[in-house]
Image 1 (cartoon, rainbow, N blue to C red):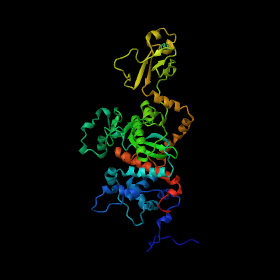
Image 2 (cartoon, rainbow, N blue to C red):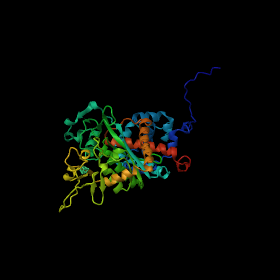
Image 3 (cartoon, protein in one colour):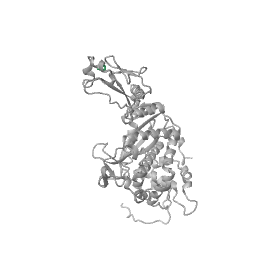
Image 4 (cartoon, rainbow, N blue to C red):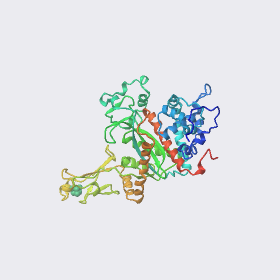
Length: 463
Ligand code: SF4
């Protein structure tokens, strides 16, 4: 029998609970079981006036932002619409059916104001990391680090070639926010001072972003997000935004290792990373300054393709500070004693060892050694001892394990882009990149915590 036609009729009273309509296996229900934003209000107290109209609850804004980054809705205008319509989002934000949704402009006002001044986004991120550590998800024994390029909200059509770019003529009072941030970060090692090389194009709307073709294919403007993860469960221990430049990546990892130690008192036994981090100075910093084993391939350009002897064919005598060549002769830095001892280091942080010309002239191996030079020279990095440590570690079984563990950080980036839809930044400027990267990393950690944390560590509902 056909039922009566369904007509839209408003009831006078409703007996309705949002909680009943949120699926038990919904990701936001799991996150709500572990998230602890109780310190947000305290953290922000001094940034609110004691008089005037009451503000929107900062914890509500934080919950809404996290809904956005967990569910891949990064437009604040769309986020407000979605929270208005979606029962699960409303439930997570602790809002009843009749509660009004904050206007989208509230987010940008707070982001540029008190959120940035108080660095509350980092506070929330570090709170979540501390929860992960407390729940036993991160032991801090093995770190892995890497960077991933994320396209900036800038395009080639609105850019200037480097020859026509002069930051000194920009009037900061008349410039948009992203341009002012660019001027403020010109001396910052993660942005303006990361490299003396001026990129081919500079964006008008986001000049701090880097014109890069690092991925292959057409070049574009981008920032890079750096992750330092604990390899136990790929918990992101720290995140740092930079211009997409190799030199800045190394600096970001140093910053993150020191910050995690200061914030969470963690010191790893090893750092796992790819060749980009295998420079002599980086390896030396890890081995000598921080006592961390570098499970990193060494950048080595001493190989030769023309069949002549490579540096590896020469034996270094540590005690006497000299190389012994395949012909059994000595290669030294100096052959006479100077009154003032010399360091001998060149600008490229290498020491140069030379054979004696008479030795090479009379040598039957000369054609295999230095056919086009009067005598053979061999360079040695001033960080060679630390490079040797990394080379020895690369022969161990643990290093093979580390090569597999390194994929975890790559998986985190793949997850960020594919599941969270983070292929392009929405906000401009270094601060916009900072806010977006840190919120995305918080969302990733929260999902991990909700999935893996033992039940006894959960807070809220069950209690
Ligand atoms: S050419 Fe000179 S440096 Fe090379 S093997 Fe002969 S003596 Fe040694």
